[in-house]
Image (cartoon, rainbow, N blue to C red; front, top):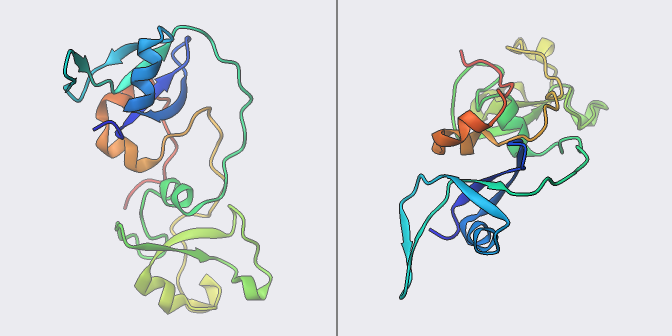
Length: 174
């Protein structure tokens, strides 16, 4: 329970970070944060009972510069909504596919990487979608940077976070 994720908001209610319950409790005890949502019950110690926070807000403003998102497997899956971009099947068993294969000079970039299920990735092999006869559902593009980004799997498990987060751009499911 102390390793569960907690959404951390800045003083102005902008999402800032995701930390663990252990860190959130330390911030609360030091007077640096306040609990906004208690979605998980209580944590008991020998001498006290503590609320396990789901969302906390810092009592001071943290200034930070926005960095572009890294191109990772989880980020591509989140961008594509865990949907194969060739057949439209929603699955947890997905792979990354380069639209223009790397051996043909395709870059490892947001515009050339999509989510594919294993059968579609095998069927496409080292060809382009046009050569394989497998059109893409959506053209790949870099996700818009709208401040803090929460990976898709956290949104599915923590519904109480949604009211504090900006609407995220995710490809629609088919």
